[in-house]
Image 1: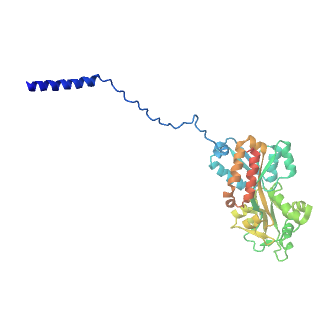
Image 2: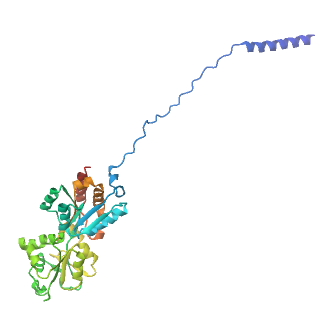
Length: 344
């Protein structure tokens, strides 16, 4: 009986505890606020990609044709820059005609047929006025330096150095080589010269003929008997190659291309080289230009593009063509002139 009572008490206690637990009010667990996760603010608008304003002047970004004409001396340099420009992606039609500086400037300033004029001399005030008359404001870029080269055949072993005075005599009243120096052969001088539309001719007249003979220099060369004139420098080269008694003058590039069959003559004991041309020591070194107008450059992005490409990259090509580069200061002047013309 005692065991039964103890069992009863045990069961009673257990049941009481269970009932007490069930009857107690539930304790609400404190609400724990989750820590806020800071989300980085996202810009409402994606930052715009800033385009380089010069991208519009890249060779593969422009369309439309470009027409160039002028100096036979500048022609090989411009032709090389044309090839580079096309390799960089330009797909338009770019033509370069070799017709002489004077004729090229006339087509640009009078006829208004071209976008760029090549010239181996500075444009004249009267030509600038002609350009203005057809609504073109001239912009010039000095792209290189040439050493105007006096050349004779490689078979000529007597003319190695001449003075400016002797050169003017050769291209005016002298008939035989012995008229210039008695010890030279008593053989007729075969004179070859660029044509009168050529900037090379104009420069030679100014730097040699008029320097020695004054205002009569141009008339003197035109009156020299038997002189053969040609706008094609290759014709002049061939003329000199054909006789040991021939003489001609043309751009250094044409001499360098044919140096195995020609001799370059020193002038006043100065040979035509990169150093003497750049320093101005060589008496008949000269500038090489390309000309356009602010109106064309603003209306035709392809023209502005080509000119920018030309003046920015000509250093890479000019020595290989046979001419000499301008100074860094001149390059900056070219870039400033370009920026001013296009309104950059």
